[in-house]
Length: 396
Ligand code: SF4
Ligand code: SF4
Image (cartoon, rainbow, N blue to C red; front, side):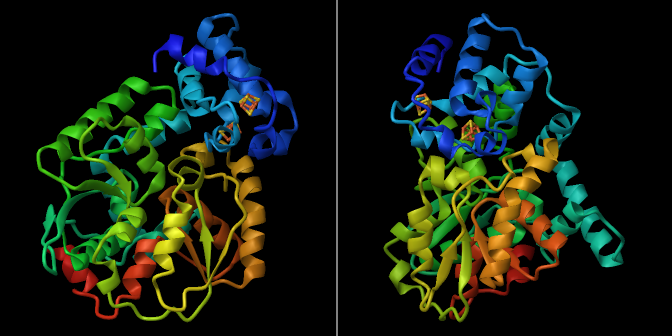
């Protein structure tokens, strides 16, 4: 959206304040600068050059989680995400922490090395801070390469691409593996182009839209070389960026939504689920993709599926927010950890790797024994006859 259109869209804000009760930072700080309405006003003034970037303004804009609960609640359909991203591109004050996280996201080879080091660290049982312990808990047993192509294991009904992401690529292999198993079992060929890279969301939210555009172009070219029914993503934080940066052509679709629509889903033999699980719907899924119902409907196909759902509201992970603002992130997570504790659930299901990691840290700090997995993993574990041993599939 160009500046002129963006300002016109921001002008739709009628200052009604309906968004404020949905805003986690307004709920915490109770001041206008921490509300969506305040941020829309500050952002437009910054973009138009009528306000200078003073430290307090920068702080209020940087505190935003970009959860977009305000956008979902706004009756005037003010495109809050686009407005805030644009205003952030007018600031030149990205913290070193944000820069480091973004650099890592853009250098997958280093992330791969980090995952190998983390696996060695785990095997040696060396001490780590809670976030480090949480990330190695989510690591798969083995770091093995993912193949570029997986054939359909039933009569072929289509071909899809699978987007892996940056941090999730080496650290969330379990989810990718489960997604591949389910898709091939449903009759899809799965293409995983090795040239794919980070979706660019971190760059976009760090005020670096040019880099985000570059990432989108790399991924378009990586997936664009072959005819695909859809490009699927399992991490919904990345998915929002893929969808919003996509061009007409192959659609980008959330994994659960796609599987739910599959004509062969009814043929998937599933074992019953014995325990009640807790669902967490990340902001990217519930506020932007609006796919919470699809996730629940897919999991309902598991016989005996019973669940509770965590109350809506950002958990505090929010891209690099967890690293930039650890105290606020902990405060936002705490009621959710308490709800988990009270529920007695032993499994938490979430569709975003960043949220999974943030929850895993909270669980680690509280000493709870709760496993955090993606819906694809829950579904995979309930296949009556998993087609292949997980490690064997990953080794191919
Ligand atoms: S709900 Fe929409 S129109 Fe109302 S104050 Fe918030 S952004 Fe403005
Ligand atoms: S995106 Fe989230 S944190 Fe930011 S203003 Fe909107 S509701 Fe508040």
